[in-house]
Amino acid sequence: MRAPATTPSQTVGPFYALPQGILWDDGPDVVPDDREGAFVLHGVLRDGNGDPVPDGVIEIWQADEQGRFDHPDDPRPEASGWQGFGRCGTDGEGRFWFRTVKPGPLPTPDGETEAPHIDVTVLARGMLNRVVTRVYFPDEAANSTDPVLATVPAERRDTLLGVSDERGLRFDIRLQGDGETVFFAV
Image (cartoon, rainbow, N blue to C red; front, side, top):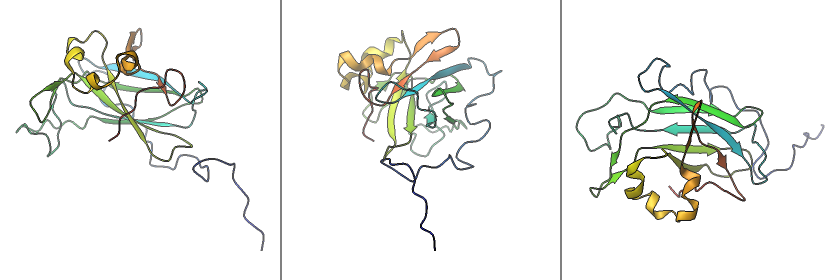
């Protein structure tokens, strides 16, 4: 009997191609392109060296334009019917994209309000656990009073702000190193 072939050394293994079903054709399309207010959220996933991660998976989830989730834990009585979830694999250059809408502000359990934001999960090779971050909108007045953003040191908050560009809203993610994106324990 022949011994099995070894796989490349890595933190999590063996290395494998993304299994079928984890990604789907319209996974990045949270809304159709003709939806009022639709825009493209896009960026590049980079590792600690600043190199693109070509085999990552980015997930987003968010509230609708009124800040509602169709979820039993949403304290407001009306269900929105809004799924608000998308998934996109990164391409050979580490790029990802989503078509979505800007969410409304969210109430917190203690009566405060969170600024409009999109929750982001990153899955990639070599990571034992997913990491979670947020993308906030630039020039959003509510950012200055957001209770979560206020917990982030001022000099690192820019890693959570998208940048408006000709394509929509750019949000690059750096997993480690200089300019590392702020990640939250959830």
